[in-house]
Image (cartoon, rainbow, N blue to C red; front, side, top):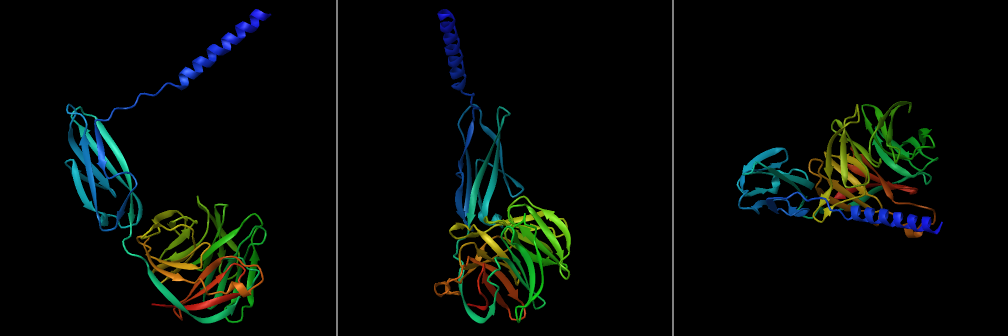
Length: 352
């Protein structure tokens, strides 16, 4: 019996040593004959500055006979060194440069370098003037707000408490309201072709409603969280709480374009409620009383509206949450601002 135990111990030790030997085996590394010395990976480039591409040979016997760089779909041949303007990139944010080398031994070496395009200038700061204070239901956890034909359309969030509502913009009386299924947390809304589009937070599903009856007339899907929503030209524009803004087909909700929101300090995350004003995107940053003005073509933050003192929370004892809700009053060229469980809405004029 004792001999059997010793034998089993020896077997276990042998297996352990073999597994340990296998775990220490290092895969052979593919030998490179060239290297990309510039740009460095994740290099930050200010818009307008030049980008320098340089490749070096590390083996005299296997030299470079041809090299090319692929930038935004364009292929450019060059000889070891190449410089181009960052204005080549229309959008801000993360970009990729593909660098391909053909060697004298007929091998092909490829590198993909990520760079980040930052704006040079700070966003312009705007002040505001309060034109009017309107009543707001303190039970509304505002997610989306629209002023359309003198009617406020508003979505309210929270699981089990979400609803879609329209109210008279003058007296605040409720015209129509529907409860959203308890499984969904309602998010941003927009109007396109007499239909209301509404996102949900984490369900990756949105709903489409008739603007008059609130009858549900469609559903659509997406791959991210749902936060803010607006309409620009013939596209539905969506945020997901990151620095990205998505442009989608209103009929299929397929993704057609994406921008990344950047200011001179880098990417701006927590993009939330969206509104379209004179061809620009206005958005609030979740958790801040701040509205950004964004160029929809590039993602550049061109302006900021600080609303930190618009609602004096010190003298208010009821439960409130963050600012959320931006509606554009086209007639007055003004904005209507509110927040989650706020008692008021504020019509403001933006001042230079």
